[in-house]
Length: 348
Ligand SMILES: C[S@@+](CC[C@H](N)C(=O)[O-])C[C@H]1O[C@@H](n2cnc3c(N)ncnc32)[C@H](O)[C@@H]1O
Image 1 (cartoon, rainbow, N blue to C red):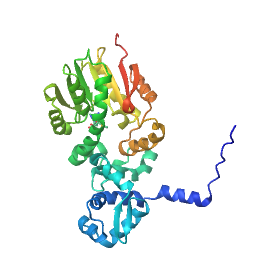
Image 2 (image 1 turned 120 degrees about the horizontal axis):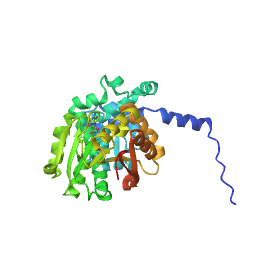
Image 3 (image 1 turned 30 degrees about the horizontal axis):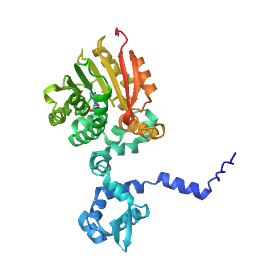
Image 4 (image 1 turned 180 degrees about the horizontal axis):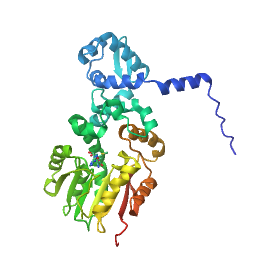
């Protein structure tokens, strides 16, 4: 048998370097500042000299030079001649990423950064178990979301970017043959519902979400060409839900809430589904390395919303505790997990 290579213990210098990287706040903000000033776009467009970049981005030239020195040191740009910059594989990759989903989030003037700044209140979350957003910004996330159009539209757009991926999978993998009515509970602007309705012309659907979402949802349903079979229902999933629908979809909602509140939402679905309807809990896991990446998403869920990431087994337990029977749990392409439940009193 070959001998296993022995890994050398890290030296004190290695450990200091690792720690310095872990605690560095300058780099994330330097990258976000570069994105906000559109430096990769400007360099790609030919503004490669410091004075031209300062002019085009409206920045203080000497300070911009210091920022670029750091960005060169981390590999976001290369210095091709004194005070002249070029793209690197990293900045090309950044430019290739989808604008709304990635650069939009990281722009320091966008609602995405406001959301991320909840991390500065992590201590509050760890001490209390609650979201830090209110402690940091003075107003709880879901209140700000309802009052602040830019935040709601941004969050809705990011959610829809996921739902446009999960919707087609749900539309094709789930058997909709015997279903006539479907309601997407906390369905946002209706992106998932629209995909399901578009694939199944015999279905009628509703999206239940908070009242301020109505305009964005109606527009999205119209643009998807399903407005004649879809309706927006303003309301809260903590209140009684429209009863008697064949299928209740709860997609990527439970992770926004702690077990107590997630259980309340499922109990509302169970009540409304009665002995006839089915409940589809939809979640997206971050792939095979989920367990590793999950720790970071889980903390984001906590500090932003007071929510939590759950494994499929944890979600099934939540459903059972809410009085549901799990008919089956399945994993589909794209990390999609669908747990099909029904009320404990249902006959089949
Ligand atoms: C993470 S998003 C998921 C959206 C969508 N289901 C999807 O899969 O993309 C959570 C949704 O819950 C909605 N929401 C938050 N609180 C709510 C409440 N009390 N009642 C109904 N909807 C609510 C938000 O407006 C948002 O659309």
